[in-house]
Length: 382
Image 1 (spheres, rainbow, N blue to C red):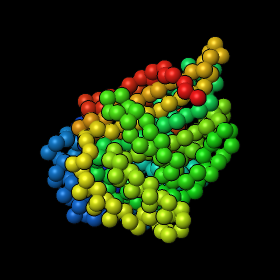
Image 2: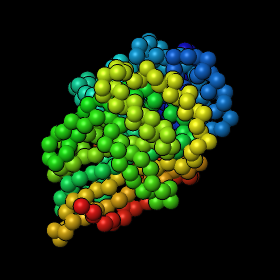
Image 3: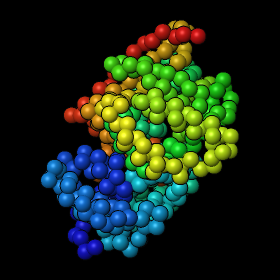
Image 4: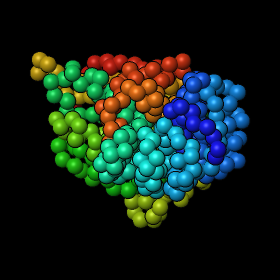
């Protein structure tokens, strides 16, 4: 590219003109000492994103054509980024090509992966990352980074943590993009395992419908989702007997339409629901006015308190003004800042647990219409 090295202050965002990559650039862009490279397969889209965003931020922006599945090692070597930030899902269809390229050029790597096998398997790169003296981190997003940070922040209040029930419902005004939509559809109606009553048990995606009431938002429908936490949390918190993650949609018509689709997939009538991502995303645009600009996340922790009493804590995040999409990228921007500042000593390849505190992540949403509530004690209903 012929670009001068930014003295260790260059961040490459792959998927940089997508839903989360652009928001990451916007948040990191408050630092005038940074150069941020917005990369993706379509150079024209990257150039357009640079022109749109550059007047709003202090950091220097530049575009780059780069395929995360087939990264150009020579181009990356010339660019010499300090951190490669991969926001180019869906990760269900990716391998570790970009992470391996980061290791090869001596750059730190992090991603927003929510694909269970992808995040679980990142440890395969541990030896290579340590040899290169870099950190390779997967799942630097709402799960497992934020979810585990919430639990870590309040774990000391339990003598024994036994159950975690948590979930995410975005605002209907949120445009998830084709990659996120395909990611969700990849497990709709499909079997996967989660911890129930102390045993790994098979459940199905977007089934086992439940409902949760958020402060200030009211009740929203939720259903099973397959995420990396279902492996990571039982290993990290060995006293757990139940891990139940759910997600939902604000508009009931959309939610139950997806629920109906899950049964068609489960029955074998539809084999690959992710192929419908474009159609369903198009349909969603026609229903934007049916919802609001507010979404939320919750984490309910159940267990035994210090005096052997039952204890339930409920933590919530409420995002208004369609600021919800800033939440999934906030752990990644927090970790990027810490890496650039030299505040992270860990090296190797791992899922994003134990690397960030809840305060680290909360700092990334300052100035946005995002509120963290709790944790509050709540009544345990059998």
